[in-house]
Image (tube, rainbow, N blue to C red; front, side):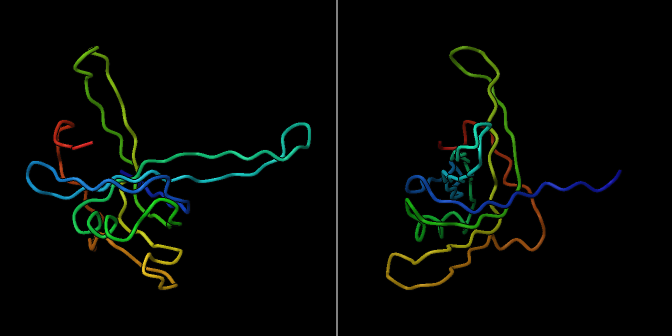
Length: 142
């Protein structure tokens, strides 16, 4: 089978303070909302702005680092992969889907809260691509 690639790179701004929670087994997971912006001319030659919102999750030590350094408005570089999960809604019985970016590396592109300038690199610490921990949807605390 031919090799395939699942890689996402985003540079955007955090929409709200990240949530860091723990699975029942104690694994930290952070959820981030990231906005990317696009500017284009419409058919009437008028500039338009479009914002796209993305959900990213970070696991284990990277999740703890995100919780410590990332805040609403932070400009981030995020590298990871797309992952879609599905579940059956308990109330309607309807099949639901969620596509998220599973972050492997995050770089804080602006100043940190303590006033230090520069880039703060955060990494999942995984030397080879490994899947996020296998959890049932009810294990994810979001």
